[in-house]
Image 1: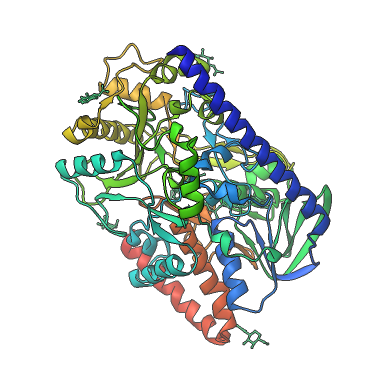
Image 2: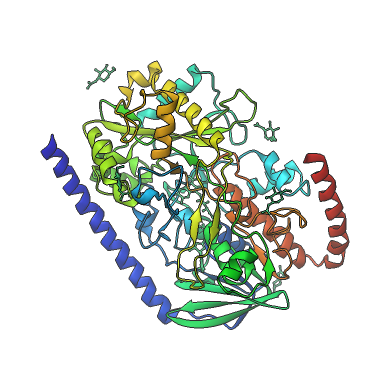
Length: 597
Ligand SMILES: Cc1cc2nc3c(=O)[nH]c(=O)nc-3n(C[C@H](O)[C@H](O)[C@H](O)COP(=O)(O)OP(=O)(O)OC[C@H]3O[C@@H](n4cnc5c(N)ncnc54)[C@H](O)[C@@H]3O)c2cc1C
Ligand SMILES: *[C@@H]1O[C@H](CO)[C@@H](O)[C@H](O)[C@H]1NC(C)=O
Ligand SMILES: *[C@@H]1O[C@H](CO)[C@@H](O)[C@H](O)[C@H]1NC(C)=O
Ligand SMILES: *[C@@H]1O[C@H](CO)[C@@H](O)[C@H](O)[C@H]1NC(C)=O
Ligand SMILES: *[C@@H]1O[C@H](CO)[C@@H](O)[C@H](O)[C@H]1NC(C)=O
Ligand SMILES: *[C@@H]1O[C@H](CO)[C@@H](O)[C@H](O)[C@H]1NC(C)=O
């Protein structure tokens, strides 16, 4: 067996290394061609920083619905058609197309990873994190979005926005390929009293809906004409004069440049990089800016209020036979052909086949999400995930490596509304330095309690007839560092969670949207940075709370609203009226906030 595992490791490593080589080739080709052929004009109406989920929605709508001039400035490079193969997504994690960020050493979490740091993947590529994600499309609970805007928009308004992005910007499709585990989990869910649900309703289970076209990954950036995007430019600072943003300073091929914006600078650089950029520009917490000797433009809680969907549970399920989504299948040429010709088969797998929402406290609103993955990280015999997640060697050898004889799979129990909050702070004035990201995972005990309840539910699912008949059992191996506790007792699970802490890569909140006078607010409900003119933030960082589910759709929806209220209405030549309306809007928001809070 050992020899067989070693052989598998060698074969997989060869494949993965060849692909890595290919990744570098694509990257350097774009680097050279962007240096030679991509030009930047001195001035535009709008500058968009970042071509991720949000930036691409805004760019697409400006391009197709207005005559404004604009440019999208992207720090990453252009991708490639092979990167669109869903099953290869994880190979971009930790690559040159990832910002390669990680948490600072965590006090209560991430013990199983080197130096107690969890990796935080974020796309550095045209399309941003939507080129690295699992493509799962969930709307979330629309009432939460009504609250974000303090009642400024109705439930129906958000529904229309979702319909708009689903029909015009994303390509939402049924999942194209599922392993046997899907039916088993859905059957188990029915047995345990959970319904099948549709797009919007909470509490229940469903097959994943995915953002794919012909089985390939589809991102909002795939709508864009490349002439609007300049790649490999790092925006280093927003230029502000007398509290009006008038452009950005950037680095292109090692040359500093300034580009000016007549109507506005729109930051869509994501939840870690937007606060970094604001802080570098002198917009942030005054104590931080003072300590780094950065002149303060506005004192705002930029970078605070970081929230993330924390989870655990990798490889907790052992199957006594291989499932149809497995690493071996990925080396099968027939499946490759099926993908390229028909857009079907195991190559289209988003990783997550089923999502479920439930309450661990019998409440009506869910506090837990399940993501069902037909594989575990030990499936690759240590050739990729161990490195990309930076799993501690001792932990790998004493836990994950011991399951090589089984097919491992995973049900992630995800805390939908964690109470632990962290922060993102720059560590120096150098824009090339990574920010210090401290999500403070599990610093509030309630999050651990919810995860323990979640793991007990996972165990219940594994022990249903439907799962057992498929050959599933729970991984009984005590997790390294937790041997002293009785297995599957609350104390054991607590230890396990602190060791094997994971994120579903859904950071939000660092440029909190709220009422202008609240002490957490960075942008108002028009996406405008408080205290400044012509400076907007529209991306994951403005979400003041985590949605009920995967967040990509909510971010795309927010970007679309940003366009509607700040760019489109102004084109509609109703300028004089909007001014009066905004006064009423403010009163309306005030009333809502008094009633709701
Ligand atoms: C591994 C992973 C799996 C996920 N799975 C799912 C899922 O299944 N379903 C779901 O709904 N969500 C998922 N998400 C979350 C979702 O994809 C992200 O939340 C979303 O893409 C974030 O969009 P954004 O526009 O805020 O930022 P991003 O898409 O990250 O875009 C930011 C862009 O700005 C660029 N940028 C940053 N700084 C600068 C600078 N200084 N100068 C120039 N450019 C800059 C970046 O390179 C990037 O392209 C996942 C995320 C990850 C990482
Ligand atoms: C854009 O310009 C064209 C040509 O001048 C004009 O016909 C069109 O109405 C304009 N569109 C918008 C949205 O202003
Ligand atoms: C890995 O875990 C072992 C045992 O807990 C610990 O002694 C060691 O310091 C860890 N290594 C790293 C790099 O964190
Ligand atoms: C959505 O959220 C609201 C407000 O928190 C809550 O009252 C409602 O029950 C939730 N809906 C569902 C279906 O969970
Ligand atoms: C796997 O487990 C199932 C259920 O316990 C059993 O029926 C089956 O024979 C086992 N298969 C193998 C290959 O051991
Ligand atoms: C905001 O005010 C509340 C009390 O009203 C306080 O608990 C909190 O720490 C403040 N937050 C910030 C970021 O100053």
